[in-house]
Image (spheres, rainbow, N blue to C red):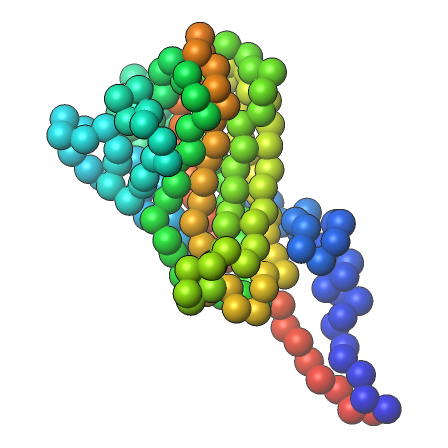
Length: 198
């Protein structure tokens, strides 16, 4: 009899459907791993010639409301401050390559000057070699005035997935100010498939 072993282990890792998130992994699994998000702490770029750090784009016209800030950073020398968010803002990373048989742990530090009722969302979006979206994973949270850690674990990618981007979505909140820092993602596990013949 022929059977695939390890299937039950894979199923046990899942919470929800096959394209849901995997809840097992956390920040401790990033030790010794490489962060695949370029300029994840917003240190690179020319803050006086552009408000957008190197390796990031903004999906709307909010560039003038985005400021590099040194005073209230979480780690490193800078963070991003978004003021007077009069529309939803998407901060999107450069593309990075992924392994479709791996699990990725993504995190972001974010806070607001006022507690929020509308959630901030963290996404990992995977693409095939033609640039078509094949997977989307997300996690959301409402914020308080301290630094909030948002964590997202993604796995069971479409077999055609070859690259991904991280997106942080800030809700419309005109009377609030948001700060974002340390948007990171790590390959923390690779599924091992073994074909066994009894």
